[in-house]
Structure formats: structure tokens, C-alpha cells
Image (cartoon, rainbow, N blue to C red; front, top):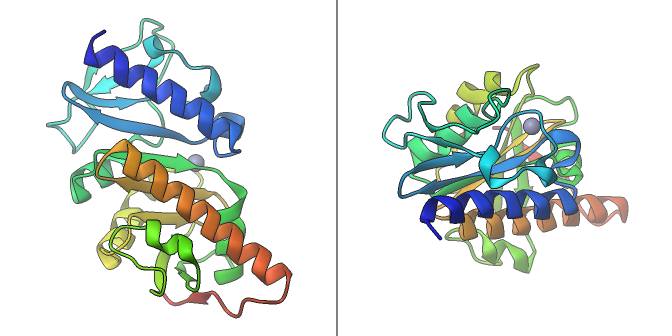
Length: 221
Ligand SMILES: [Zn+2]
């Protein structure tokens, strides 16, 4: 089995997992993985739990200023995921090996507690063992995840996401208010496990707030 098939299959398998977690409902969300022959990315506007390896685009990893297709799906009606320029922020600016986008409810609600008007801000996380799963962090650290305002089109988030990444070089995630979260890592395992930890942490913030246990998770960007 070639490396090409392996990574395309992996994208499909992970998209099914993310759908089962509620991260990729209603065609949203997905993952992009850097392979030896290019950057693999799912098509746009399709049920992510039903894509097949032949539906996955491969893009030129040496051209991170825009999407240059190395291999297109056989189905010519498919378009590259709208997340592509946002995934490329992580590949270009952080040398990521994989980047994912989740529409999970937990980062959306946690960010709403931190920034109720949906504007830019930060979500402060502290006091949880799961912080240890984030790059360079320990369980007693306070971690600030940047929040950016949502836009009508996914691609319009590209510049504000890049600015938030520059302002927070110590974390591998950006939350989009009322929308979801982008998470990346040096490889797909690191991107996935950091996303799992962040989802858990965001749920902990929301549930703690519901129980009256958590004070003011927000702050300025
Ligand atoms: Zn989205």
C-alpha cells in the first residue's frame, strides 16, 4: 500500500472519528495532514464521515502561499475544503505536520463565557491535569487560548487567525467565536491529542461554570 493511500485513508478515518465526537457535524470540521508527497485535505461541503480516499485532495507542500493541487479527486464536482487557507497558516507559520478544525460545542460555549460579545479575547485555562497534554505545558500552568471573531466565510478568518497565532506562540490552537476551534501539531497524533485535551478542558470550563465553580475565564487578547 502506498503512502498516498495511507494518508488519504487516515484523513477519512479521522473525519469519521471527529463526526462521532460531534466535531464535524453538518459538513463542518476536518483534518489536513502533511505527507511525503504533499498536503492532504478533504473536500468542502460534504458529509465528512462519508468521504473516501479518492475524494481527498493532495496539495503542493512547497507552495504554502496558496493551494496548488498535486492530485485532484476523480469527482470533478468536489472543491477543496474552505479551511485550507487556515490549515496553511499552521503549516507555514508553525511548520505543523497536521491541522484540524472542530465544530465541537465545548470550545464555542467556553469562548462565549470568556468573550460574551463574540469579539476577540482569550480563554484562560488553569487547574486541570489535562493541561499537561498541551505542548510545553504542565498541569499547574495557566494557558491562554486566543479567541478571534467569526466571519461570514471561513477563508475570511485567515488573517485574524495568523495574527492570533503570532500573539500566542506558546499554544497550538485558535478558537473562533460562535463557530469552533483550529488545532495543529507537529504530526497528526499531536494535533489530535491536543485537540482532545482542549475539548476536555473547554468542557471542564463550561461544566464548572454551570456548577458555579469557575470565575472569569476571559481576558484581553
Ligand atoms: Zn468551520
